[in-house]
Amino acid sequence: MRRIKAKEIENKVCEAALKANFELRKDVLRSLGIARNKETVPIAGKMLDILIENAKIAKKEKLAICQDTGMVVVFCRIGSKAQIIGDINEAINNGIKTAYKRGFLRKSVVRDPLKRTNANTNTPCVIHYDIISGNKIKIAVMPKGFGSENSGAVKLFNPTATEAQIKEFIISKVKEAGSSACPPVVLGIGIGGTLDKAASLAKEALLRQIGSRNPKKHIALLEKEILYALNKTGIGPMGLGGKTTCLAVNILEYPTHIAGLPVCVNISCHALRSAEVII
Amino acid sequence: MQKLKEIELPITKEEIVRLRAGDEVLLSGIVFTARDQAHKRLCECIEANKPLPININNSVIYYCGPTPHKKGKPIGSCGPTTAKRMDEFTPVLLSRGLSAMIGKGSRSKEVISAIKKYKSVYFIAPAGAGAYLAKKVKEAKIAAYPKLGPEAIYRLKVKDFPAIVGIDSKGRNIYEN
Image 1 (spheres, each protein chain N blue to C red):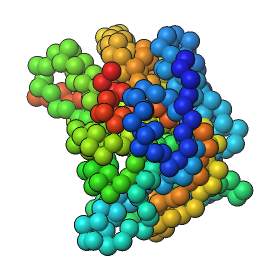
Image 2 (cartoon, each protein chain N blue to C red):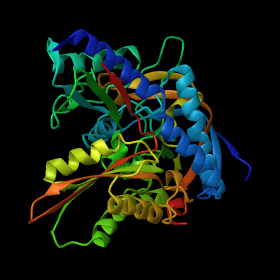
Image 3 (cartoon, rainbow over the protein chains, first blue to last red):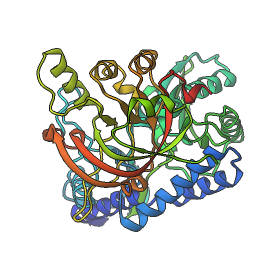
């Protein structure tokens, strides 16, 4: 067993949260640049230029990329040969608390969904744990803004539903969201499992690098088709028209029940933020 | 590329009626931030016939909850939030003289009708570019509801704040072009 102190996890989570909020992911920035070069609608090009400029200012001045610094989602994969000394939940939440205070990041989490008093710490975060092989801990920190989060949806299809119906559902959600989800968007899609599994896969899919494809050919094809169709909608950056509505479609799939076909689409704005640390 | 219209705030009705959906503008002057909870409170005040903590007559509301400012900087990251969440409160505020709003995204039919009725204007600002927009804010002070933290009402002094006319006083809507 390899012993890892909770304090070390706390420090690494803090670093990752700061990095995620100040430095736009390289793959996201690259895809914005590629989209900019292809864009022919003037206002769309101008908006993409502003987004690229915004990312530069944020990184240089250590200023949040977006004022909605999100509710933080953490994917924590713990090696079965790693032994944690201390409380890992507390360590992760403390790391986030410190980052949001030290980094002048907005505290957007309310203590109770109905009473709605701000917790002033931006915690708790939403943590997904998984056990992996080895003696390391891999932690991905994803601050998730709610303009785009509010635009997501789950649908429990009949098992006889066609791929065309799934595509239509996903495209309709992006159209409904329109400018509110801050396009160009990135889609995380979960297909299969149970209602909750599809939702967590959709979130996890947003961690996948832009430009990568699902290893299964038929799923990769579905990704390509949805991306192509979305960029034909004309929604464009900020919903003002243009060729750039979606930067990437990432699908993760899972086996499911004979009676069902859950599909979840989790939309991310163009400011898709995450950072990973390995301990 | 069309020439940017420079607008000094408060904006006059004459200037408002000259604006067309799609016009690109640069705003300079005072705007008040207000988002969900501030809107709810302002409308509760109006309903209860209590005085409002800010003067909304001829004012501009910016749907924004900024990040905290660092020492020596007036404000943190400060882009627009989704306007449609404020739709249920907007017609009442327009009836009380609110002259313009800045946000992101489309608005309800009721809001568009109220914009026409009261000759108001809805601007959209570049969404998800909060660090870029921070450069356009020269001063920020809490004006009301400090307990709401990021949702408090801030009085911002902006200079050359970039925006696009989303819905003009004739009800023309950029999202339907």
